[in-house]
Structures are given as structure tokens and as C-alpha cells.
Figure (cartoon, rainbow, N blue to C red):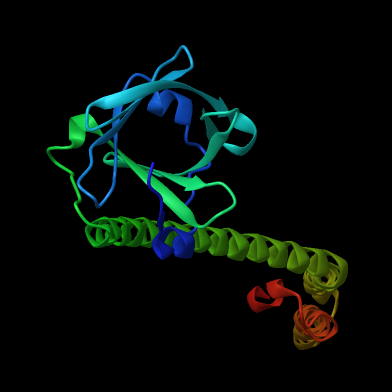
Length: 253
């Protein structure tokens, strides 16, 4: 089986981690690529034998798949063997890396020989470059989509955290002021009612003046505490930003 130095596969590192070489290889006739015009065929059988022919003359050897490193062993003469690691597979070609080297062997399903039959290493390399460029572009596009989704999820998490921080600050600092504003509002209303009721026993103009004074004072206190609540809330948000400049959620505060 002839092997080749081919930088394409080394450069892309496009090794198939999920390739079930045993299932792919078994019971098919694989034509080994070579640029010398010989026809070498390997037929891997499920009983562990492999039929190897070169221009019609062949021999029977044994083979087995090693799941630990995703490789196949082909036994040779005198207890020697060849270890080939699965490297690349698509609908047309199966590539193996000679273990421990940068050399590759290529097999083509004989049923596809009519559609895909590179005669030179340059033709084979061009096919692999085009194929791997396409695969790489797909991987880049998928990675970009994954990054976009991850960024959206991150932004949503930061937004939710910012809303939680604002709610906590509001509960702690603003609500007390708002409560006081409501109390003074209600108190002012009650004083106004009482003043109006008392005015029947006083001169008409004096009762009206007292009612007006009570209404104005209570309204002023209500507005004061309401504005104070808003001011404290904004101040505490500002302090949180200053104390946590690296917190990504501050962009949403």
C-alpha cells in the first residue's frame, strides 16, 4: 500500500473522531490510490481476513480494528504488521495515516470509481483542499452562530441580574421614602378634611386659609419625600457602578 506526504491533512487536522472504520471498511472492495497505474484492491472481511490484489494477483492476510486509537492493523510476513490510523472519510474517499508519520494512504470505494478516480497526487490534493475548505467554512459559520447565541444568552443574563440589583436597591432605599410620601399625602388629606369641618365654627375666610395651608404643607412634604426617594435610588445605582466597574451587568443599570 503506497503512502504519500500530504500537507493538506496535516494543516487542517481534520481527523474523524467518530469514524467507525470497521463498519465502513467491511465487505467492500477498496481501490488504493496510487500514481503508478497499478490497480491494488483491498477487501476487508468481517471474519478478520483481508484479500489484497495487485493487478489481479493477490494474497490473504488478516486485519483487525483497534478502538483505543481508532486504527487498523494489517498483518504482514514474519509477524510484522502495518498500523493505519483513520484520518478522513467522505462519500468518495477514505484516508489513513501511517502511525507515527506524516504519510497517508488513500482508498476509494470501487463502486465510486467511475465518479471519482484521481490519477495524480495533485488531483487528489485539489479535491481534499476544496473539501476541507468547505468543511472549515461550515465549522466557522457554525461557530459564529454558537458565539452569537452565547452572547445573546450572556446579555440576557446580565440584563436580568441588573433588574434584580435595581429591585433590591429600590426595596431597600426608595420604598421607605415612598412610604413616607404616601403617609404625608394621606395626612394632608385628613388635615384638609378636618380643617374644612372646623371652618364651620370659624369665620369663613379663616377656615379656608387653614385648609389651604394644610393642603399646601402636606403636598410639599409628599413631593419632597417622593423626590428624595428618586434621588437616593439614583445615587445608590451610581455607587454600585463605581464600586463594581468590571461587572458586565452595569451596562444595563
